[in-house]
Amino acid sequence: MPLTLSSLSKAVIETEYAVRGPIVARAQELEKQGKEIIYCNIGNPQALEQKPLTYLRQVLALCEYPELMEQAKNLFPEDTIATAQNILKGTKHGLGAYSESKGVRYIREAVAEFIQKRDGIPADPDAIFLTDGASKGVQAALRMLISGPQDGIMVPIPQYPLYSATITLYEGKQVNYYLDEHNNWKLSRQMLEESIAEARRFGVTVKAIVVINPGNPSGAVLDEENIKMIVQFAKEHDLTILADEVYQENVYAPSMKFVSFARVMAQMNVHDVALFSFHSTSKGFLGECGHRGGYFEIRNIDPEVAAQLLKLQSVSLCSNLPGQVAVYCMVKPPLPGSPSYARYEQEKQAILSELGKRAKILADGLNAIPGIVCNEVTGAMYAFPRIELPPGKTDTEYCMALLEATGICVVPGSGFGQIPGTAHFRTTILPPTNKIELVIQRIAEFHKNYK
Ligand SMILES: Cc1ncc(COP(=O)(O)O)c(C=O)c1O
Image (cartoon, rainbow, N blue to C red; front, side, top):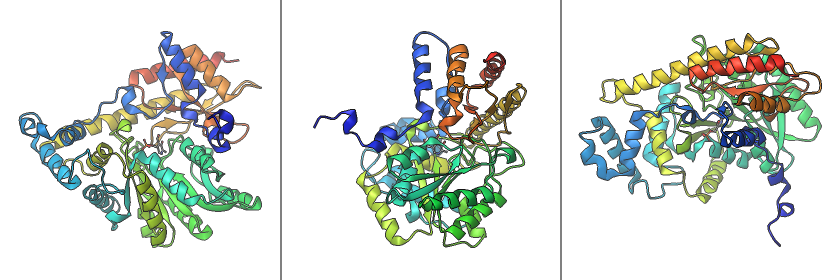
């Protein structure tokens, strides 16, 4: 039987990933024809001029090519050399050998220490799995949760399409719950109850709830009260929580702060709600998307389930070693007083303060355009403004026309989900500040004339 489209599974055909869909393909075509494109479609900071952190790259370079250690004494700060030596010792055989399926233990110990410090709670290196980006961790969790077509996973609307795509691929049911746009994209208990009740009416067995905090595409940071409410909801309905916390360093509003689900659950003394939490080297101020570093931590998971999870992870042997080293650098930055510290802090603060500035310029600029309303971008890397469209037009048509007219590449709201009858688009806050201003000007001009 030849491999043809008709021989593929329905799940493969139906899997969609809007962030790299037809609008992006058209943008690439236009770029080839010589048109200037401003890519606001994907959270890929280093594709938009963000510089990698020197510390991380120096450590990685030394780990990849230990022969450099001697020469590096004259080139790199001495703590990078010591760090690289320790990591290499931890890997035992260097970056060219497979590690344990969960990842190098030395690195998982560093992750556990990071969680302990961040949340003030114990963390177990054996409950940590290093992954190729957070995406692979999310896919592993969903693989464990979806046992048949009756199994449902609650996902926020709007959501990051990794979730919808993976649930489709694994042939589960996506159970939507709406984020409250009029309340800064918070979750509401009423909306959660309505969503789960509706799914159950259709015979769906709801297994888990996904929460993305800070939010993609919402750009919102959840407060502790909201997280407590979600934990309580999950407890009452016996749901596993998938806490996607890849944007935990991306909090811009001075009044907001990131609080992890693990910490809130410990404070609430909840020890019977299963939790997967995800983190990544792709976001924050590292923006190391290409290095595919990530981890997830499990809590309150039945040991027999954890053993199955380990078995599944071992099918792909281990996550990539340079990505694991990037995770180490993320969770163990240089300490105050060490030779790399000042430069590290300066680079980190420069990136975060630029992102904060852009978040504000973008939301304010969009709000100044008649027919566009945007919530404050308190975190993550995106704005998800609501747009008024002429009758009969769709957000996809709008975004395609915007691209053709202005070279600005954004993603239609329908790729993330939205309340029927509303229209949005998602833009990142990543283009350099002067380009963000240009983006706003061009959108304003385009929107005024769009028919
Ligand atoms: C909410 C969210 N989760 C997970 C990911 C996946 O990131 P990675 O696989 O690069 O770690 C992304 C990437 O944009 C994201 O926005």
